[in-house]
Every structure is written in C-alpha cells, then in structure tokens.
Image 1 (tube, rainbow, N blue to C red):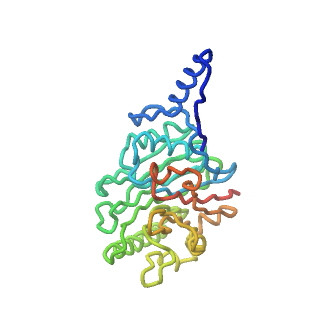
Image 2: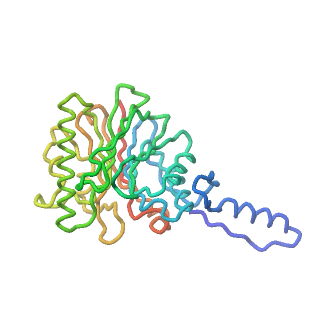
Image 3: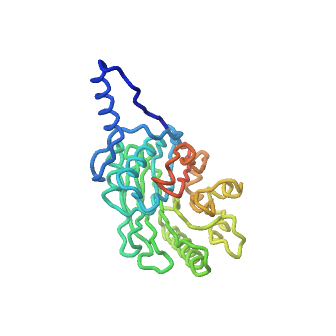
Amino acid sequence: MLKRGVKAVWKSCWPLLVWGLVAFSGCNRRVSNPETPLPPSDRIDVPTFGQPNTLEVATWNIETFPMLGGQTVEDVVEIMLDLKVDIYALEEITDASAFRNIYQNLPHHSGRLANFQSGGNLRTGVIYDTTVVELVSDSVLFDNDYDFPRPAYRAYFRLKSRPQLNFSLYVLHLKAFGDPESEGRRRRAVQKLKAFLDTDAGHGGDPDVILAGDWNDELTDPPAHNIFLPFLSDSLNYCVLTDSLARQGNEFSFIKSPFSFLDHLIASRSFKNQVRGWVVDVLEIDQAFNAYLAEVSDHRPVAVRFNLP
C-alpha cells in the first residue's frame, strides 16, 4: 500500500502545494453514485494470479456487497485489475448497480446477476473477461426450493481460444450456520445438485462442469457430517479441486472466528481431462491490504488456474 504525505514547503512553492493537494484528493475520491466512473487508485497491490494462455476461475463471497458503497466498489475493481482472473463466481451481491459498476470499470469485461424469485437480497452472479470467454446462456436452478436459500446459478461459457471447450459454471451459496437443520439443508442441496448433474449428463447434456461457491461447510468433516460425499465418493466423474488444499489444515477462506475453509471448487472429470494440469489457491488479499476485512469481505477468493492444451 502506498502512503502519501504533504511536506511543508516555502511560500514561493505554494502553487505546487495546491496542485499536489488537488491531485491527492482526486486520486482518493470515493464515489457516492456506484455507477460513476471510478478515479485511478493505487491503495492496493496484490499478486497477480492469472497468466497468459490459461483459464482462471475464482469463487468470491463479497460480503453483502458493497459493504461500504463506493469505497468497496473501488477496492474490488482494483483487486480484480491486479488478480487478472478470467471468470469470477460471486456471492452476496446486494446492489445491482454497484455490481454493474465493477465490470464497467474493468477493460473488456461483462457480468450477469442470477435472476431468481427466492433468495432474498443476496444475489449470485458472474463477472468475466470477454476477450477470453463468451457467455452463451444462463439459467437458475432450484428456485423456491427450501434446501437452496439462494438458488443455484448456471452460466454456460465458450472459451474463445478453443471454441470446442464449452462448459457450465454453477455458482452456489448454500445455507449458513452449523445447527443440524442448516447442515441438513446443505446436505440435501448437494444431493439434489449431484442428481441433477448426473441426469443432465445422462440425457446428453454437456458433461464439462465447474462448481464454484460458498458451500458454508468443510471438506474435512467426518463422513457423518460431510455434505460433500456425493462428489468425494464419485472420483470417476468429479474432482474436488480444493480437497488437498483444505486437508493441509492451514488454509482458510473465511477469515472471521471461527476461521474456516468454506469456499470450494469442483470440476467434472470430463472438463479436467481437457486441460493440462491445474493450480488452486486461496488468495490471501487481506495479507496485502490491511483494510480488506473492514472494507471488502470476510471471505477470501479461492481460485483455480487451468493450463490449456
């Protein structure tokens, strides 16, 4: 993070001081209208995750976005500019105009919010680099289903550099809290989703699938409480990309007490077999940006980078 200051100057240098103060205030102005173009900013400097000739997908719960209005919008834009991830699966969007303002301030990007009837004001959606992928279609699944407090959102993408590689990205935000009823809702939701995917593939649907989201649960739970078993036990057809990372025991995506690994990525074997390896990571933005928890989110993004053939 850059720190700026104004030193005392001689009276003869007063015009330069005035100019400097104007520039300072312009670069740090916070917009009140979330659809106003954002000023340039250099408050945040996080490591780049995206690389040339790869495909990156990140899941990111941006806590009740925008937490602090225009300030949070500006922070998210700057973080995305640094990360250079191709597709973001986003959760907890509460303001559609602020959501639009993210991709309107990113070069060659677009976005789409899920259009569902249930789910309250916590929306899911995607923001993506239009030079890398094309959004072909989207839909909502399990709307008005008690086990899905936020319906599943399906975005069907075509990779522009390899038009034969089309895939569905499912954005999830499952029931929160650790009580038995909430855990039961998550378990039934995962079972329903897995059954839908199996049926869809069996009826000729595209088997290339990525599941991304805030699952509100741990992959390392014992079998009696592990909601991921339908996917973990079907290694022939699915690869839980975050499994080995979660089992290291020192990675967390939720960064308030109790620290937890709740945000996960799963890919179908069909999709995984079309790429040449992958790297998954928790992007610890809060370690580089001290105001992250106060201004942006209590979740870190979790991202995967696929090496393309």
